[in-house]
Image (cartoon, rainbow, N blue to C red; front, top):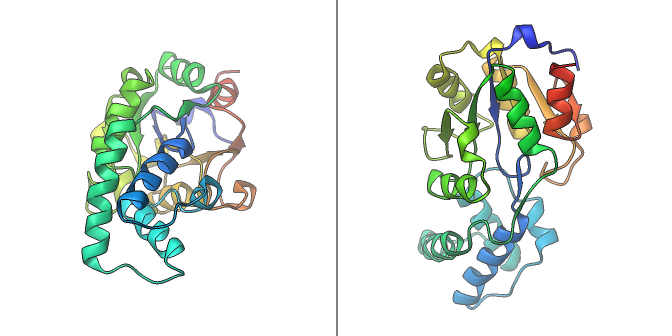
Length: 227
């Protein structure tokens, strides 16, 4: 990893797959949704590759999967969203866990003088309670969900707007994520980007993604920045 601390003023950190392993929450809420719609359940392993592009994309992908690649019409998609949202808010955080090294890494990044923002494609009404439930909310100056801006990652707009909120230049603001979505958005916004080796990269290895580095934990990342 070629990034040096003296080139950074802030970091933007993704949520699902980067800080919190939320696949269990997704599976429980989605299967309650499918039960309510009288559809077949879906295995967590099938859901994992669908995560990362926002809840609307996740729901439509699941409906397509259980309906034999048939696209859902707007009425079904809306009914699914209402059901999923209700169930997700009820179980949010109950079937998820913070990845090892996250708290230590965030604490070290803050102690090193970096401003922090959480930027996720997850709706803000889901993201903020999850961060609070996991004791992570206090590390961030800002939390922006996928509904905070006109477009979601991999579009660069959310990163550009988050840098504006932080009062930092993109080239001095590190993006930390788990997928090609994060890397593509960062490249387009001109932010340096580091990916974690775990998480939800659409079923593919992050080692093939154009990024400035890969780390096994946020604690390892902080250790590299503060040797």
